[in-house]
Length: 326
Image 1 (cartoon, one colour):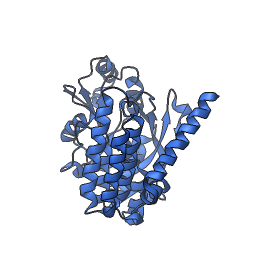
Image 2: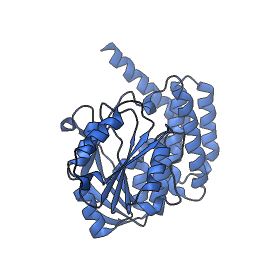
Image 3: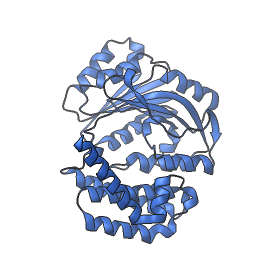
Image 4: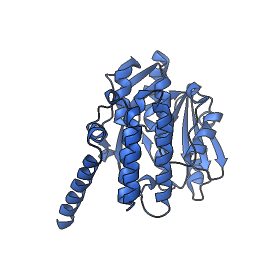
């Protein structure tokens, strides 16, 4: 088995047929599809089983269905990885779709280059992939590249840590798991894997289509979700702080999440806590190596601190007021 594609399933009955159809329409040998039911209470699994029943026996056997009580995406992914038989692991969110040449491209690269990681482009869409919007992420010139500081600096400053744009050797998950119960689990795990990789194959082609939801939980800063967002920021900053003491490549992530946490606290009216967070950043500033930071926003915060953040928030407020007047 060359590739195990993992699809956690939870409350996606409106979209799961599109996802499964994009897989079935191009399914080839040496690929297994692991669909892990994360305790969904809608009709998602019935739709999946109906689609699989319509396949011939050989194709049906390429699907692995796992059930678990609802524990979240991280637990679902971790459990599926343990069951995976593929030499490589890939991920699909169950409301998204893959391009028609996904498997062909991935398997050709695996067969010819055997890289530690394959990284490719993605696009976002709301209703139809025919109206998708390509997203700009860092990709080196196409081909197999040895990992070096320049590549890592660009990837780390780009902050595109989505699991779904990477195909990764299964061996990297032997001692590394997705953290449970928090947001930013991709940042935590995928960044660590990139620092361990020897080489990456960059494919300058869009293989993944991400369905954009404005109501996504990560964008929702109201109600009970605020506490989880705050705790998740604390968790990732604590973890990155530990790594930063040994690996300066984490400088950009530490700055990025310091800014993100400050803005979250301002947005939720916690002005004293926001100020306190800024002073915490200043105490840890000595651990940052600015030569590993090339994002202008991060650089400005590093040098100008609170003044820069306040100015940025004032600009946002003025732009918002202009839009409201229109």
